[in-house]
Amino acid sequence: MKLIEDLDVRGKTVFVRVDFNVPLSESGEIRNDTRIRASLPTIRFLSEHGAKLILASHLGRPKKFDPAASLRPAAVRLAELLGRKVEMAPDVIGPDVDRLKDGLRDGDIVLLENVRFQPGETKNDPELAREFARGVDVFVNDAFGSSHRAHASVVGVAGLVPAKAAGYLLKKEVEFLGKVLHPVKPFTAVLGGAKTEDKIPVIESLLDKADDILIGGAMAYTFLAAQGKGVGKSLVEPDKFDLALGIMKKAADRGVRLRLPSDHALAPSIDSGVIDRMTGEYPFPDVLLGVDIGPKTIATYSAIIGRAKTVFWNGPLGVFENPAFAEGTMQIAQAVAASPAVSIIGGGDSIAAVAKAGVGDRIGHISTGGGASLEFIAKGTLPGLDALEG
Ligand code: ADP
Ligand code: MG
Image (cartoon, rainbow, N blue to C red; front, side, top):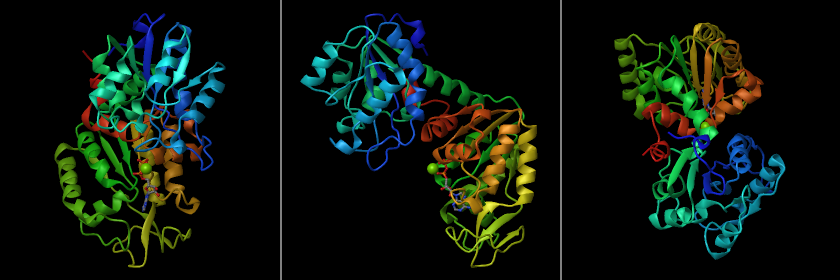
């Protein structure tokens, strides 16, 4: 994979796919600009080296033109962060956009409107990809969080330009997540959260690499229930019982220590905000559900994390949005931060949990891609990365 600094970009028209898919408030204000900030090194490098920059991104999931999904707020924020002008295009493609592109001088920056305003984007329509590629000398992908999608602005356009390269953010993501693919041992994976279905392929691939897999969150109850343990009204996915049993068997066969929580915080409901009891005994009372890992589990998991040389964490260990049920997640965040291991965290809620614990600056790498980071670990590559090769 070529990097932007391997190319001579002065005077060249460079199409950069960035990930400005930022959360907006109802009034259209940017609630968190992490993703825009993460793209600054690439944009600065290209602009300072005299490229004519066309930036493209999606925002949300609009199917057609929708002012509420406009990237204009991102253009304003980017201009503030860069301290230089960023021209906002009135549309994704079309004659008005072409005029803007033609008027670019070396170092100038234009941001196209939300690429998903064009229905061809998600279909990887060759027509749209050709529009993106027209007049472009170099395609740069710096949108790791979108690289698991074979879309026109991520994959299609890459095949139609004279040169292509990775931006700094993409390179950093691939480097760090690559440490999970080829981990320094011992390697501990901490997996929690609710979306068991999405995480099963990741657990499968981690079975080849991990020494310890620590399970928490709602996912733990699917594993425990699959073993026949009564878990009250905990969130379980009965159609995943066979998969869960299969994973436990494979782990045992390969000598991977897959651990389930040994105690739990039980509550009458997710929004009760009150812990009824801590227990390691089954069955749970029918009227209670598991909302967090208990103190014994916290101690066991923290000790394992402390001995690891590589840690990958995805998914909170409890219903951390509620402070009463956040103890497990906060303690594990502290353990990951305190561990000498290279630590890598992915997943939207996991990132929020790390921020809440205030340990973000003690984590090796916080991935900007949720789905993309999981798919990269499961498959070892992504469509958007493959498109940069050759
Ligand atoms: P990520 O976004 O980091 O990939 P997920 O989206 O898979 O994580 O899971 C996060 C959600 O899982 C949170 O909303 C959290 O409240 C929920 N969760 C964690 N533990 C439990 C539990 N024991 N019961 C129900 N929901 C849980
Ligand atoms: Mg989530």
